[in-house]
Image (cartoon, rainbow, N blue to C red):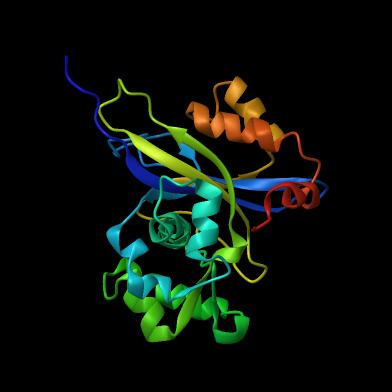
Length: 234
């Protein structure tokens, strides 16, 4: 019998914003049909942990959550720096896929949207790595914007497996996600209830962790109650 493959560590961001009428919306992205993993499925932005995400140089560009706090939240199986790396992976993957940067300048100053767009172009053109971009621009990952939400692991019978931490974050007031990108064929803002209804009708394909996350979010009346439950750092 072949032993199951070890899952790769990954991180996913459930991006939220207030709905026009009431409640809140989530940002869903559809992966291109050509992608070997989850092609054509709707999901939340995210991806695998990179070695650089947990590097000493990257940790110097982090604000809002310490390595010890991250380990306390995720559990003792992680070294503090590796735990914090999953927060960093969220920031990096969200920026790569959607152009939304959970970052700040020294002193917490907000970054202008036009500058963020230019930085995203540089990153996607491979002119800079994410760390090099942060260092050159003297920017920090604003990890306090992220709150741990849940954990899902791909079943052992699958050839490609991930051990994924889900986080929630509210869209920064001065930013707008890209409609498409190399890893996003289509995107939409939608309330959890509406997403679940479309899934039931077969119009919004998704895997179970996405469905289960939406089901949990649908129980909250608005962002305030959701934030009260999750946006707490020990």
